[in-house]
Image (cartoon, rainbow over all chains, first blue to last red; front, side, top):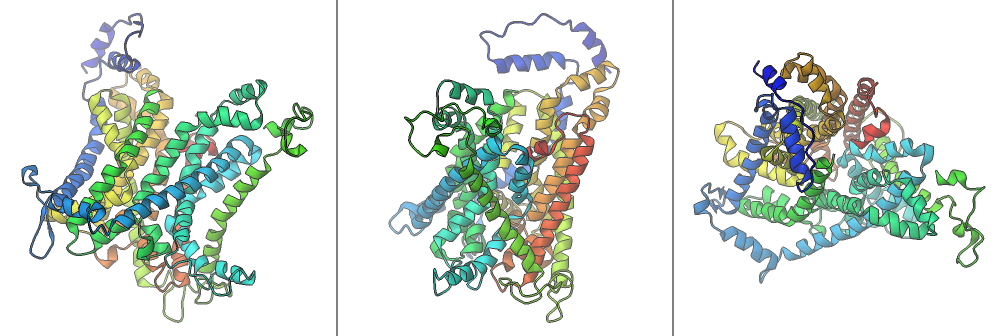
Length: 330
Length: 309
């Protein structure tokens, strides 16, 4: 073992003050110093199998999508991927962009509809999710654990189960319609599951609410009560303490929650398929799903995936950056 | 906690300058509005599921109206043999669900645990890059990963013998699931620090021994939690699995539910969904019990910590 003598040769030097340098670099130097006597490849070798997997199974598939998106099609309109970047063509990318923004932009309504649905659903999620998270973090008292278990139970109850439950309730002879008829709100059963935007939006809210509540709760739970007491002691009413202390403090959690729920909603095709299945409520995810299912639409599907990725790049990067920062500020 | 101090210490209740009824002016009033929003939300989120479970025990054909109790859609449907444990298609789907979940679990978790250990101790640009790549798979919408995997399999991997079906589904699922153990184990590593394995090495263990007999046992709770979460999440997966499914036999239970929810549904679909729920709940509860057992003597062994994962 070559490492043992090296260890004795490294004397513990007094700490150099970190002024003028970024703390991150110091931390790295520290790490190098303490583990100098481990072989260089020791820790990387742990990462290697998983990294190799991700490189082959994550980067390569994206390269394939790009190759199809900028590739060509054969006589039977099957996609022919082009693997060499110097032969790539933007023919199909241009065609798809025409469908969104050109003369005959028949995909544009779906694009706008997706933005509206996600916007409305995210707003409802934020307001209701914040109220619930705030209550659980500040006021739940000894019922906290029970409420938390109830709030996270949807995580291991399949999304499908939760949508199926609403399909059962909203069918024309389901309990919702029968209750409404009993109360004489309506005479005829309402066709909730045939292209009703409200059903899809509420389905999204129902599906993604746990993902909004948990990060908000995790954050609100960690706010020091002394900060709020200080707000009160300085003469603030409960409302102004909330507006001036709690709310500004929770801004990063609000942004994180919004990103966490909106990323999957932009790729969501199943909520629409299960609760409506009508082109009138189609979302962006449905365009991808339909292109993948249809013959001769291979390049279009790939281009749609790329557009979605580019669109989501900003929120994804925001989320990744804040996560990486949290990891570094250990 | 503030409502415990309510009766004795009303500070601003007397200030008549504020508007509103007296209970509104009391700063230590119970948050009734928030409480009712929370409980309404909980009822809204749980009740439909309870009704769906109840409907799977319907003796009639309807999955919208409960008639009488019966196990017809679970065990034996005399009319057309469509019960959960009777229909060969559904039985095959249950088997497929467990094959996929188990294999994904025993592949993704070791890969992820090693990845997390390496990434936490190894500093430098390549490590940051690997970490970034892993987090990217975590935030990427599943449809993108599913379609990308489908594309690479159709155009490239099929030439080396990987075809749509169980193998393809496993490749996609493992890729999608690796990030969970990494994130969970890494959170644990942050609280452990490097002192333990360094002490082990000072006492004469080789680096490899130090990792195996010092660091790994400390990570057992996180590893168990990862196993449970990856298994449960794979049982519920229907996006990746759907794009990468091949012959009918590669259709797991989740796909059976997905395709039958709107089309000619019988309570057998509810039974299938309930069956999935029982599987995942069981695994999560087992995971929690094991977590509690192994985390004994280490800090943070309560329910709240488990839920924060």
